[in-house]
Length: 85
Image 1: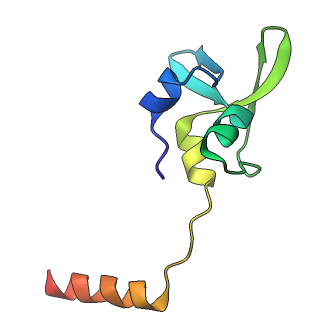
Image 2: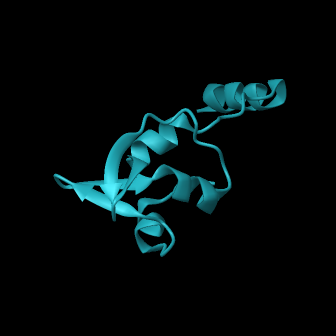
């Protein structure tokens, strides 16, 4: 499932901070929203209503997501597709 910035902007349970025109999202809120673990995200600390929280951009979050390696079958399909193009 791709995480879309628009969805995060509209979600009520996700804390957001805009710093110098860049949108940051609370890592723990996004993790709960998509039910994934984002321990590998490099956080930026911001104070949010008196509490220091870890935030990241959508790009940082997406980059850290676990991507399953392709199976041999999927690799073969990609190879066939490239050859036929």
